[in-house]
Image (cartoon, rainbow, N blue to C red; front, side):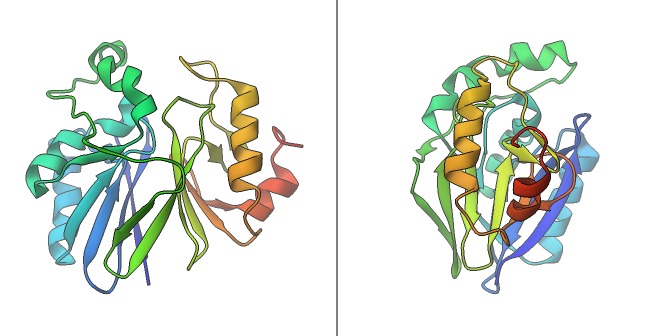
Length: 212
């Protein structure tokens, strides 16, 4: 059974995740840890639980979601996992970061490239990759069917959706992603977004004002 630890990091209040099961293998998703204190909080949890990180994954490559990539990859000797269509964002991460006073010592580029339908396995568990552009090229959601949950990045929020006014954003494409990749799942699937509280597919189908 997958346990989910949520960390809220940096000035953009990014939800980062450590997913782990009974084998103690874990994956780190969207490590937004920026300050030394945030990095210590993440690593202390991994040590306390005696976890073995086997993958670090970005749901997309906006700067607020990648700030801890170098720290996690270096500390746990991991190669970054992500979608190739996010290339523009990792190539311009320093410039975007400077606009928001977010410094990045080293921009880590993904060496493990994933596509829609791929499975990411750790311990006895797995996550299905669903490619969900519209907020940003290279955006993915990670779906666990056994426990019916989604790590949704900035695609779908509680009562809202990802911004589409940033580079490569497109409202119509985002709607298509949500309707064909997420809303085809059962109402019971829990959605863990990249910012803010969790929600469910059923709740968003019934209540999300952007999708009615």
